[in-house]
Length: 113
Ligand SMILES: [Zn+2]
Image (cartoon, rainbow, N blue to C red):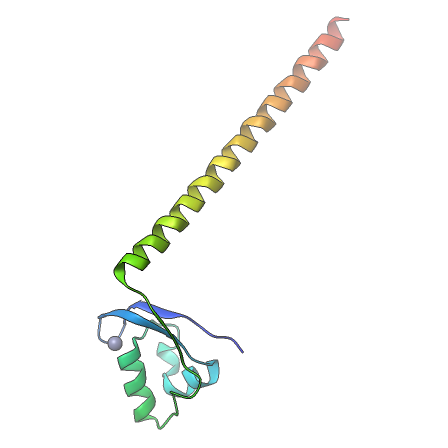
């Protein structure tokens, strides 16, 4: 079963989705029109759509509330992680360059012998 996270700005009411939720794919597909299935939809709009279509949306739902502070922390952490990754990549590149130039120096030395 593939579950999708839904949060951030709701594409229907344009409100911030502060209570993230997960529903089974089949519930999502029954409740949400195919043209909107890849959009972010807040809990209120989702529940309204599901009710309109007679979908039992509360059966397997999971919630993950996300305050602004928590969201900022997550963004900060992922940014730090990315920066660390970039740093490690840069170091590796530098080492490769050093190795290549060292090899070249060795070759040059051999030629001189
Ligand atoms: Zn909404």
